[in-house]
Image 1 (cartoon, helix red, strand yellow):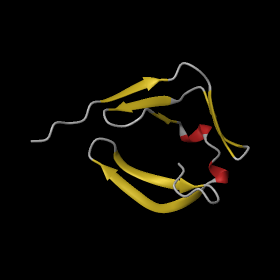
Image 2 (cartoon, rainbow, N blue to C red):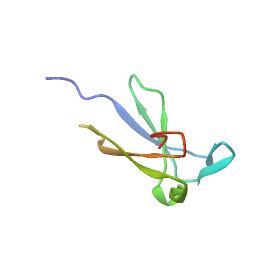
Image 3 (cartoon, rainbow, N blue to C red):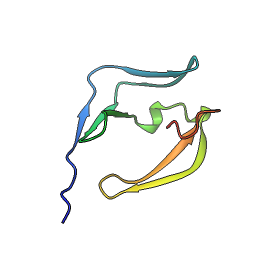
Image 4 (cartoon, rainbow, N blue to C red):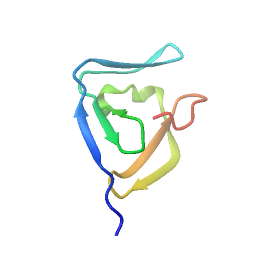
Length: 82
């Protein structure tokens, strides 16, 4: 039986902003950093802190037995950026 990957969630203790091509996509004091063995740390943001009006739904969907279903969004020429 495969061993479950070690995944840790850590609240980020500072404000996090993400900009792409001069556009601010998020400004959050509620970000969580996900740390998973074999992958670089990744920030996760509450949806209410993300400029969803700038994004379009992607057809890409993935499934992880540990993190469940994931949906993706694109920003202009950046497919699946979020």
